[in-house]
Amino acid sequence: MITHATIRLTIITAIMKQLSAANKFSMVVLLLPVWIALYLSLDRLTRVIVYSFLSMPEDEHLTRAVYFFIFEVPKVLLLLTLIVFVVGIIRTYFSPEKTRAALEGKPLFVGNVMASSLGIVTPFCSCSAIPLFLGFVEAGIPLGVTFSFLIAAPMINEVAIVLLFGLFGWETALLYVIMGLIIAVTSGWVIGRLKLERYVEEWVYKIRSQHAPVEEQPLTLTDRIDHGWDAVKDVVGKVWLYIMIGIAVGAGVHGYVPENFMAGIMGKDVWWSVPLSVVIGIPMYSNAAGIIPIVQALLGKGASLGTALAFMMSVIGLSLPEMIILKKVLKIQLIAAFAGIVGIGIMIVGFIFNAVY
Image (cartoon, rainbow, N blue to C red; front, side, top):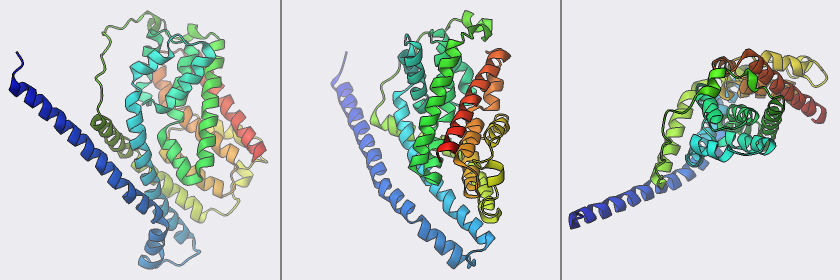
């Protein structure tokens, strides 16, 4: 029997939750101007630190390297914090169960486009490749559609987009997203048309879910804000060291490598630079945080945009650890086809950019 005390407690709890949500939302609103002020002051603060506090002379190799490092590290971390927080909130609307449900029963090409688009906003890392793959297969989602998701999710993630935006500008970031989507959609479609299901391990198709569907609890604004903060702590906590190492290497290249030094190795007139960069990039293990600052420095020293993008996409999109993990559910022929098809797509993108830019 419901008593008056129970009703009052329920009402008080609801009011406290509303106040908590309002307080957290107010904190976010108050922190935003602080973020903007810090971001707009970075250049001035860097000049004060390098030229006034450290008293370093201008136009020297070490000065250029130090300036690059001190300016780029906080800029990238500020951008990453903001974007990861926003994406963390957005991702509360896209659970793996909802993603699978959205892709069920879709025809091949439509499914490839949807899977690639959902891959951008769905949490994904190499360690979750097998659970996601199995979940998609259990739901009856075609193999090609599944691969479109597996290609897009790691390649077009918020860390890559933030770093590209911060280091190259919004045009290059948007270009990367578009090219990544084209590669994911096309590669998944080709894999689907080749009918490679026979190269999936037999036990995968025999598996049946042993768990009842989990009923999702509705999330409040407070819950979504908490998810945003958790995403910041998780993502930034994992990649900040890679960012600093990558920017440190980039700073060394920026300060000491002569202008146009890379033109003879990674320039647009060197036809073999694109396939070589992809072949070198595929077995490398790095993430966007580590590789993009280095690519930026190489571009500043004469590397062409198409070759640099091809190298970056092959490192991020064809992760060696992911392929090793997928060996548990895929036969080597399918993994080779996956790497080959995506690699060819990346090379085509590289050649197109070298021809246009």
